[in-house]
Amino acid sequence: MTPELKTKIDQLVKENQVVLFMKGTRQFPMCGFSARAVQALQLAGFNDIKDVNVLEDEALRESIKEYSQWPTLPQAYIKGEFIGGSDILLEMLQSGDLQKLAQ
Image 1 (cartoon, rainbow, N blue to C red):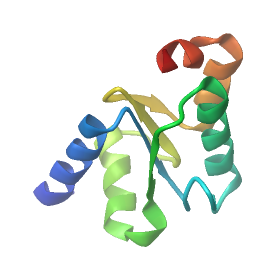
Image 2 (image 1 turned 90 degrees about the horizontal axis):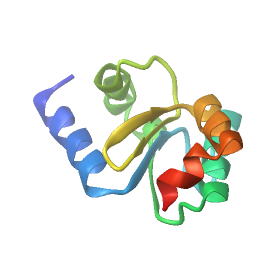
Image 3 (image 1 turned 45 degrees about the vertical axis):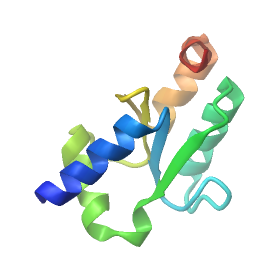
Image 4 (image 1 turned 30 degrees about the vertical axis):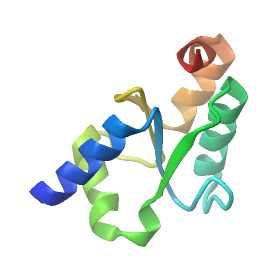
Protein backbone atom coordinates (compact mmCIF):
# COMPACT_ATOMS: atom_id res chain seq x y z
CA MET A 1 0.00 0.00 0.00
CA THR A 2 1.38 3.37 -0.97
CA PRO A 3 1.50 6.17 1.60
CA GLU A 4 -0.91 8.14 -0.60
CA LEU A 5 -3.50 5.34 -0.57
CA LYS A 6 -3.14 4.90 3.18
CA THR A 7 -3.77 8.64 3.63
CA LYS A 8 -6.79 8.47 1.29
CA ILE A 9 -8.30 5.54 3.21
CA ASP A 10 -7.56 7.21 6.57
CA GLN A 11 -9.39 10.35 5.42
CA LEU A 12 -12.41 8.43 4.12
CA VAL A 13 -12.72 6.46 7.36
CA LYS A 14 -12.25 9.48 9.64
CA GLU A 15 -14.34 12.03 7.72
CA ASN A 16 -17.47 9.89 7.21
CA GLN A 17 -19.75 8.32 9.81
CA VAL A 18 -20.16 5.22 7.65
CA VAL A 19 -17.89 4.09 4.83
CA LEU A 20 -18.60 0.99 2.81
CA PHE A 21 -15.83 -0.22 0.53
CA MET A 22 -17.85 -2.28 -1.91
CA LYS A 23 -18.19 -3.61 -5.42
CA GLY A 24 -20.41 -1.10 -7.14
CA THR A 25 -22.38 1.67 -5.45
CA ARG A 26 -25.29 1.89 -3.01
CA GLN A 27 -27.66 2.42 -5.91
CA PHE A 28 -26.06 -0.25 -8.13
CA PRO A 29 -24.25 -2.92 -6.10
CA MET A 30 -22.23 -5.27 -8.29
CA CYS A 31 -22.37 -8.32 -6.00
CA GLY A 32 -24.82 -9.87 -3.60
CA PHE A 33 -22.60 -9.36 -0.57
CA SER A 34 -22.33 -5.64 -1.27
CA ALA A 35 -26.10 -5.40 -1.76
CA ARG A 36 -26.73 -7.15 1.57
CA ALA A 37 -24.26 -4.86 3.36
CA VAL A 38 -26.03 -1.76 2.05
CA GLN A 39 -29.42 -3.18 3.00
CA ALA A 40 -28.27 -4.06 6.54
CA LEU A 41 -26.88 -0.55 7.09
CA GLN A 42 -30.05 1.09 5.78
CA LEU A 43 -32.32 -1.15 7.87
CA ALA A 44 -30.28 -0.27 10.95
CA GLY A 45 -30.98 3.41 10.34
CA PHE A 46 -27.83 4.64 8.62
CA ASN A 47 -28.91 7.15 5.97
CA ASP A 48 -25.59 8.80 5.13
CA ILE A 49 -23.43 5.97 3.79
CA LYS A 50 -20.26 6.86 1.91
CA ASP A 51 -19.88 4.15 -0.70
CA VAL A 52 -16.50 3.55 -2.32
CA ASN A 53 -16.57 1.47 -5.49
CA VAL A 54 -13.39 -0.61 -5.37
CA LEU A 55 -14.02 -1.89 -8.90
CA GLU A 56 -12.92 1.52 -10.18
CA ASP A 57 -9.47 1.30 -8.55
CA GLU A 58 -7.52 -1.97 -8.42
CA ALA A 59 -4.84 -0.50 -6.14
CA LEU A 60 -7.48 0.65 -3.66
CA ARG A 61 -9.23 -2.73 -3.81
CA GLU A 62 -6.03 -4.49 -2.75
CA SER A 63 -4.91 -1.79 -0.30
CA ILE A 64 -8.16 -1.80 1.68
CA LYS A 65 -7.64 -5.51 2.40
CA GLU A 66 -4.18 -4.75 3.75
CA TYR A 67 -5.41 -1.69 5.67
CA SER A 68 -8.10 -3.64 7.53
CA GLN A 69 -6.26 -6.97 7.55
CA TRP A 70 -9.53 -8.45 6.24
CA PRO A 71 -9.38 -10.48 3.00
CA THR A 72 -12.84 -9.93 1.56
CA LEU A 73 -15.18 -7.19 0.36
CA PRO A 74 -17.37 -5.39 1.20
CA GLN A 75 -15.85 -3.75 4.26
CA ALA A 76 -17.75 -1.41 6.55
CA TYR A 77 -16.31 1.26 8.83
CA ILE A 78 -18.59 2.99 11.31
CA LYS A 79 -17.42 6.03 13.28
CA GLY A 80 -13.82 5.29 12.29
CA GLU A 81 -13.90 1.67 13.41
CA PHE A 82 -13.65 -1.37 11.15
CA ILE A 83 -16.78 -3.47 11.58
CA GLY A 84 -16.48 -6.20 8.96
CA GLY A 85 -18.29 -7.53 5.93
CA SER A 86 -21.87 -8.31 5.03
CA ASP A 87 -22.16 -11.41 7.25
CA ILE A 88 -21.05 -9.48 10.32
CA LEU A 89 -23.37 -6.58 9.47
CA LEU A 90 -26.32 -8.97 9.11
CA GLU A 91 -25.50 -10.67 12.44
CA MET A 92 -25.26 -7.27 14.14
CA LEU A 93 -28.55 -6.21 12.55
CA GLN A 94 -30.30 -9.32 13.85
CA SER A 95 -28.88 -8.85 17.36
CA GLY A 96 -29.72 -5.12 17.44
CA ASP A 97 -26.09 -4.07 17.83
CA LEU A 98 -25.99 -2.35 14.44
CA GLN A 99 -29.02 -0.22 15.31
CA LYS A 100 -27.25 0.89 18.51
CA LEU A 101 -24.32 2.16 16.43
CA ALA A 102 -26.73 4.18 14.28
CA GLN A 103 -27.96 6.19 17.29
